[in-house]
Length: 277
Image (cartoon, rainbow, N blue to C red; front, side, top):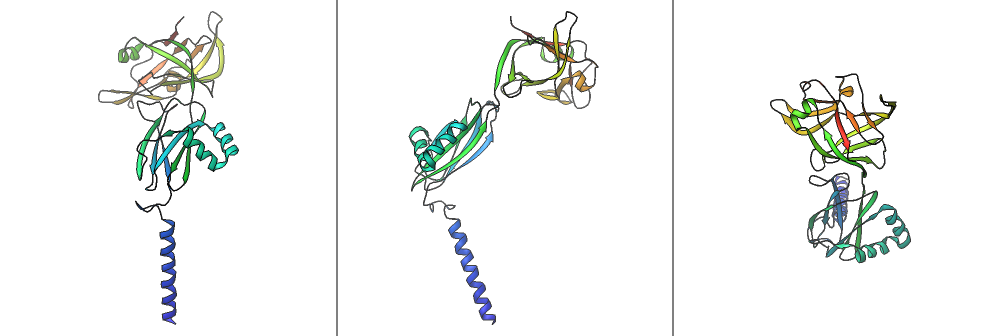
């Protein structure tokens, strides 16, 4: 009886090992029978813009003879896939896509795909002993420029960063209350703020809308105290008055600059954004 149990156990182990080896086919270099590409997606790093750029790694196996990349709107991808079927779509990518340099055998190829808008599908077809398809999606966080102008610092801000600098004001295409000064601190480093539902008029009867600058970090440090941060004074609770924007995008911001230990001075005046005429 013990011999029978031992023999049965050995048989089960042998079957399990055979199954594992069969399932793992293609994981060892040189053992792959059909081409395959695996896609890894990363947040774009500087000097790229993470709102509109994405970075991918294309990992091909040893059976890969060539690979092709195609980027298209997700709606177009879904329509074409339905129309052509998966095999037909693979052929479409090979015929219309970009041949990926270095995608021969087991390899890792890094690509940066730039200046996207809306919803996108990135498709890669690996060729060799057949064709395989891999896809990832990327939704761009797109913005529209509404004004070019000058940002004027006051108080501590002027001491830290100078009197003024050129600025580009943009509104988010998906959220009309979300604004940013594009690349305010350098490529991919923006100053953002939100409009609220609170409206009023100034002493001249012009409409103003309250804005909020949430707490954000600059790329700069203050000696012995670390990173310099900023937020509007009302958010920071250092003043009782709001910041606001006019209908022509002129902004008046009670900006509080601070480090982790304390505020960097008191707010004495408004920072302003003056659109070019």
